[in-house]
Length: 369
Image (tube, rainbow, N blue to C red):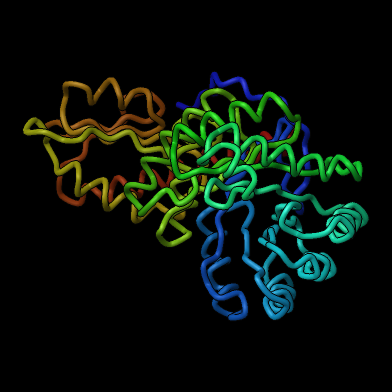
């Protein structure tokens, strides 16, 4: 059964990225970033649509050139999700995408160049109500900070962030969020903890360059999980050397595990052993693949034997406990028996029926106000 997370979130100022609120009491948003050539409009639009279908609230697109900026304008017209433009060095690119409908600018004011250039970007963002993300990365710290600290440290990341915050403060610009990413889990976590005490703006979480699908997922879960448990974080990206769709899936799984957001099916499944009365691993693989399209929050337990099966099954919206035959529980009560023949087909049908009924109940509650 669904229950509220015990996590008490850090209070932060709320900003709007397009129509998505970030910070305050808004749900923690999930982001990803395209890895297509931005100038390939069709490929980028296709990838954005796949990312959104996986559940992304916000998508970031790299805009390294004026040609890419013009392509960004075409992309903007073809998708509805809020888009963040990732821009470095050339302030003119930021000014151009601001004209083309960008929802957020990801910049480091310190690498934009002279003061007048920074001022032009900030004033344009203010005029058009476009928020800014200050993105600090351990791999690209300012040279003077590298010299001062000798190597990337949490303190160096925070000093870089606060230096950039001062640029925005100078022009009374407060609609921004900040990230202080590192590939080292301890460095990133400590930097975010320090920064959370110094500013009121939302924090964008990430363990940068975390690695491949498996290793990067583990590092991200450890680092971001620790921060989220502390109540720190308003939006996140899981940075994986993998299909961006996988970043979104991992991000959602992380938030679901902490009960910070609910979407789709939360599976509770045993690792299987010789007591299992059906093939748990095969069953889970098939169910996950078949039910990716279900967005209604639902707890589904798949347990292979009678030791923990009935207990776990009773706590789920739908539970399967292995036996001879297997037992199905719905909303905590025994419902029916299923044999192993066509087990996945029958279970999928029941899950979809339960999800549809729950969705209808929620719609009725919303209609009643």
